[in-house]
Length: 291
Figure 1 (cartoon, rainbow, N blue to C red):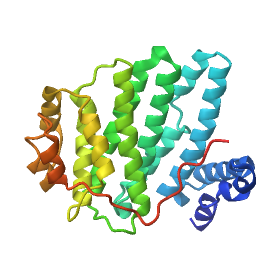
Figure 2 (figure 1 turned 90 degrees about the vertical axis):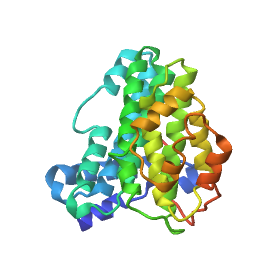
Figure 3 (figure 1 turned 60 degrees about the horizontal axis):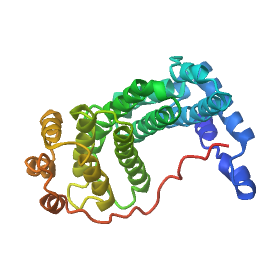
Figure 4 (figure 1 turned 180 degrees about the vertical axis):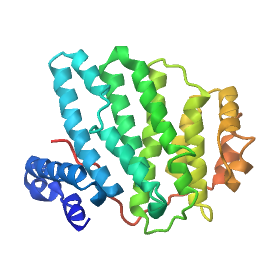
């Protein structure tokens, strides 16, 4: 596992970005090959963070292939790549990381595998919506999968067991990215004329319930609340009420606001959640730019 940690900690950005503005392709390739070898020959040496690093590198490779397919006019190839179900895809490796994080010996508030797979699914859905006009159902399925991973059976359940401190910068950045990405994806669907249902809203409400537990003793980040409220405006009162009825929520703030989501009474909602600018001391660097 020590060797795995050394390989996973390689940072292609350090090697080349200072001079070129992009990551070192050679280091990326080397890191990916080494992690694949360890996963194949010594799976017991892998752990959730290392698997997420490998999946991140696989996504870069997959996206390169998708971009080339679209550039060459081969939508059929792009669709085939999007529907690949190999155990060596980024999505499969992310799922492996989550399965490992859920083991009793690893159950220590590991949120990041959920944020990684949610980000991946939302990016892939966005690519499909922008480039494959006949595959909207596929994009919808990916967003639904992202919702399942961030809801009560996924990331939200982790947040309910954790309490935020000012040193949790990485956690802050990850949650912010998931909320912003999912709310943005709902906006994409509306722009494309895709009907929105309570199934799209339930995971967001459950994730927000997790945030309320995370910040149980303090104000919730105002920018996060803003994203959630803008997303809620995409739904009518009936759908919002139905979504809350289905959602698994238990935080004091969410229970107190239960009668406000349907009519979307913004002023009292903001008072209940005490939206404030919560700052993180440090955070993980943003996803490495694709070369």
